[in-house]
Image (cartoon, rainbow, N blue to C red; front, side, top):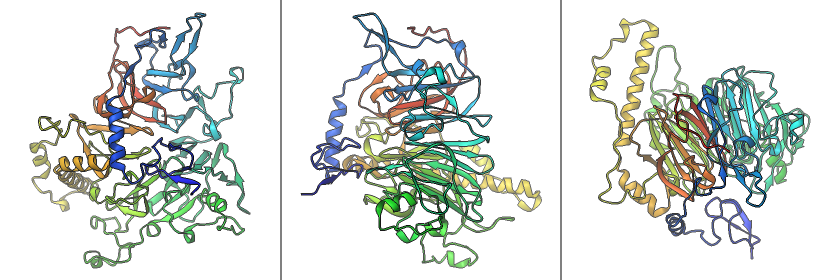
Length: 600
């Protein structure tokens, strides 16, 4: 009898005596019957009990007023069992025996961190149990659980020695920060000069991997984790400047200047590092490493691995169209020649899900790899792991605005439309969509007269200056992007929804229906959010621990539901991020209101 069984949902090995997966909780023996397992989950969700924050009369909410809010408002909601949230934001309850007030270690409604200094927060990123805030001045504040040094500052449990881990505090960095990204137990900082700093560590299903000592180039040395920001060695000639980055659950992707290459490092358990052969692993140290030892191999992969586009796209056969231009450096063709520009194929954007990696090229082709047990990669295949990058042909020719992923799903924003794929429950599809009397939402689409205004008359590019000519070309490309988006909207999603329902998952992107155009999307490990241009916030997915921000604790929210503006102090929501059991929402103070807030 084998010592372990592998979960069909998350592919994590479990002890043979365990009846439920230690990662996702799936029942042992459900392997090979995803549709049946999905139906059982659905029955549980339909019978779920909804607990509201008002159900417990002993619950006391934080006392704050509209005047306490800064121009930028940071809301937190969800569980704080592992000190994810500031203590002051947690609900309290009165002990009936003594009358004492104690923390409930959770926030049942979005609660602003009013103790933050007056500053403009541009970006928020959440790990499993921690959060990082980036300000307009390039400063970074972190708070939450400091497991494996994820906060980038020394652990402190005594308020007399400074801010607690759960309280927002400044990370001591010598440079202004351009972008911040968090994984389960790590945080990365990208400077304006193109350097990346890392704090934390990596894990896989077997436990902590450790991380290579980036200061030792002589021999590969293991550290348990890095507790303070350490510079990531990106030393390959021509690829020393990083312009973008993304964090998965336990892996990182860095995009180099010019888009010629990228670095990947961390866990490669599901080939999310775009490395599928031992011969592709690079050793930057002076001494050889015995890769036959699994721990050595895992540790070496925590050292940044330089990957060019040719490395990750092993395409040898040219098409007839591509053979017409022998000047291309890869077999991929760009949109065409433009004055002052080359035809060389480049990486334009990088994205990550929990255990997946995606990138979009200059020619607007999207590729993905990684864990695919629930269709998270979105390439239409049933394989559990997409070992080599495959194209998401669904998005060919359209530019992605955003793409990110959680534990069993991926979400993308394209021209104000939202697409999801992965496990069925997270797709944002109404449970009533198959009802013949159900009326679907109408989308806001470009008006015909506006399109005619752009499409006619055809401009004569030779009559304009170089800068204006390029702008006109960009407008033309934007219109092409809209045309391709219109084609995506015309697909038969009714049939695709039904197929996903039968399979329990969607292996190709599906449209999520909204009445309004969507400006931004974000997600946690098990929930998803979408913000409109007027700042309205929609939420769906796992609703346990109040993480959706709607004041309710229950198993699941199938379709997008508006989070009451009253819960968000009528702020205009601009973005956010989520962890495993908490959510952080960014808003702009919009107007004064007279509604009283509950007090302790």
